[in-house]
Image (tube, rainbow, N blue to C red):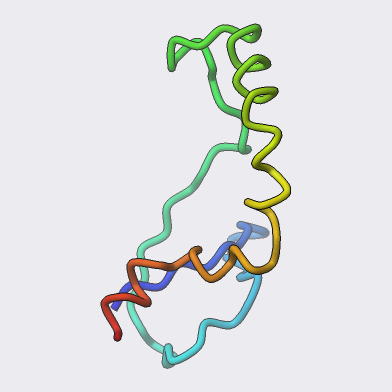
Amino acid sequence: MMTSIQGVFREGKIELAERPANVSDGTPVIVTFLSNGATDLAAHGISPAQAAELRARLASFAEDWESPEMSAYDNYHAAKSNS
C-alpha cells in the first residue's frame, strides 16, 4: 500500500497536514522534497503568454475541478484497486 500525505519540513522534522489512516507507528516512509510550487515554464517549453492563454482556455473547467464532489477522483486508481 502506498499513501501520500502533504506536509512541511520544519526544524529537522516533517509535519504532516493530516494523520494517515490505517498506518501504524514505525511504518517505513520515503520523503521527497518538492520545490516551492512554482513551475519553470521555460523548462517545459511554455512561454508566459502561452501559459496565460492555456489558463484562460481551461478557466471554464475550474469550478467543476475544484468542487467537493470531484475529490472522489483524487485517489481514483487506489480506490478502484481496493474494490
